[in-house]
Amino acid sequence: MSRKKIILVGNGPNLNRGCEAILRGTLRILGEVFSDPLVENHFFLTGKTREQGVFAARPGISGGILEEPLPDVRPVPRFSPTWLLYQLGRRIGPHDLGYLGCGQAEDAFRARLASADAALQAGGDNYSLDYGFPLKHAVLDRALKSRGIPVILWGASVGPFGAGSRTEKWMIAHFHKNVDLILVREKASLDYLHRVGLGGKSLLTGDPAFVMAPVMPPKKLLEGINPEGAIGVNLSPILHRYGASGNDLQQWANEAGILIRSLHESFDRPILLIPHVIQPGNDDHEFMQEAVLKAGIDPGNVAAVPRNLTAAELKWVISRLDLLIAARTHATIAGFSSHVPTISIGYSLKASGLNQQVFGHRDFLVPVRELSPARLVDVSRRALEQADDIRSHLAGIIPRIQASAFSGGEILKEYLEGRV
Image (cartoon, rainbow, N blue to C red; front, side, top):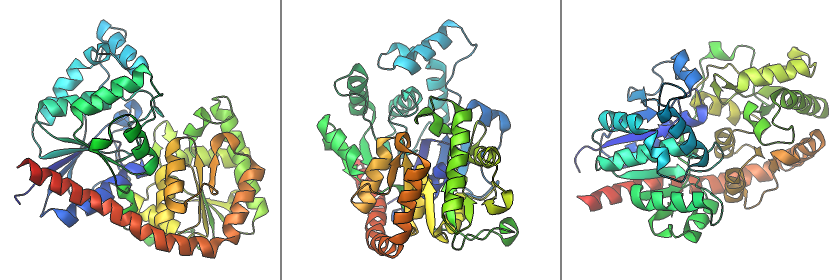
């Protein structure tokens, strides 16, 4: 088989360690099935991250592959007719008017991504409504298809888009027309795709991040940090959109501080804050530090992992914990795949689906709308009491999930061979 050029598209920058974990896991999977593949990573940026111009934990950490941001989808100037069309499409989605506002971006996608054997739409949960209607990803799919490049949704969650709604009908039509293969990471998404008539092009694989190998950080970066025996906590600022705090970020910061203080007071263990996204405007490290200050916790009792650890280095830290409590999906995946008792703070169906996949139940999932100090302490206590059983269970199930993730590479290889 000749050398294949495979491009990853639609992911976020590596300042989101979940996006980095997907990239690293994907590189490992592709390396198993293709001989010296040519891989490129073309990712979306938020405006604030684009302005900052720094996209990774530490420059050059991803192994020498080409990594560059995709053209900005948002048209300019603001409040022009084109800009207004884009805003309309982004907000209410399922109509072709939305595409008209993205014509410049679609042309730029075609010019940038002129050729490849396959495009892997990565990023985990882009094809849902968790972050609004996925117009920019749909535009990117259409641009790739117009170039004759197969589009494969890669280790993702999909939907739901509202049963019988116009949005759902539009997305189903989009998948039929512009996406060649849908590889989903949990059964809830697969079941949904079968219900809406997309089962014929959908298969179940594991999230690529499950196979990312941990890497021990340089000792100088862990000075004063000891994860052994600690409870790791990952809380993200975006949870204020989904919880009971009325979309009030400052109220959520107050509540987060109380949660951290309750864990500190309830367990005779160090508390280690684990940031997993440090993008401008969406920074776990900054948010959790603010929460600790608001709660009046002595900083000597709570340590924070340095913000410039890579996803693989964070996984090494997580693997040493006694318990992980995490809101970011790929922080929980790092815990699951390291056989660490892990509690998920969930705000969408993906957390439910992943917990069902990993544990066969949702006992260690706390929906964000049900989150309280008493509930979190109770679930944490049960997880610590059952730690040996949990580790044994994870040691049995995770190799199967990792094999499922690697199967995505085999499926991709067979698909491309079938096109020759």
